[in-house]
Length: 214
Ligand code: DX5
Ligand code: ZN
Image 1 (cartoon, rainbow, N blue to C red):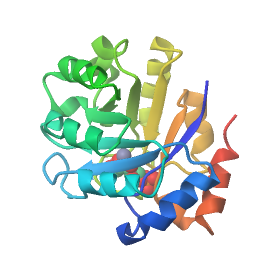
Image 2: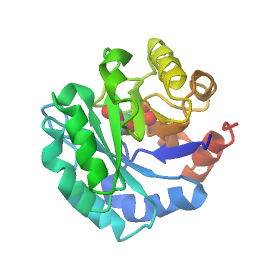
Image 3: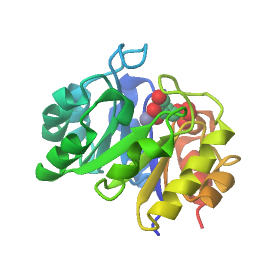
Image 4: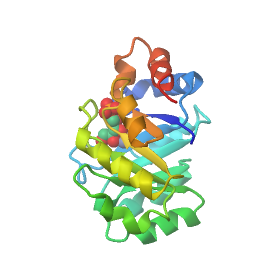
């Protein structure tokens, strides 16, 4: 099992990303996590494919789009064109998740499916052999800096038991204090946002997360 840090730039000053993203990558981050919010699926609005495309000019690191949007498929092509290698959409946002996963795979990108805290694992049971990654929300989506909801860890355990080889990503409230229990539950990809800004430096923040990997 490979372990990965996926920094979320949600809480960053967006005007600094051309320097901060390369620093995160140089320090050991694997993939840049882009939180796309449309003001409908979740109340806030963040950014779109133009930011992804602009960031592409400043880093060769892989990028993933976490689409917290209604009609997620409306945005697939734009984020693929912008250079995202993985597109993650919410099971709660579509009645046609299976078809959407097939579409993403046909376009040569990885397909990830995300579950809100209140969504049971059963909702993705019929997709589990089709997706490249499951993203378990350990907070309610929309805002960085919230504490991890402990009951969500049980879902990670159940998904890991169903697919021992699958990439399982955790998003929300990840920091060096919560990391051990999340790893124990079976996740291997870790979105980290506000903790990196609370750390003495980005480099030290990345180092403390990577230092907690098995
Ligand atoms: C929230 C986003 C997260 C967020 C995590 O809806 O999906 O990626 O940035 O932030 P922290 O690490 O601060 O919980
Ligand atoms: Zn996210």
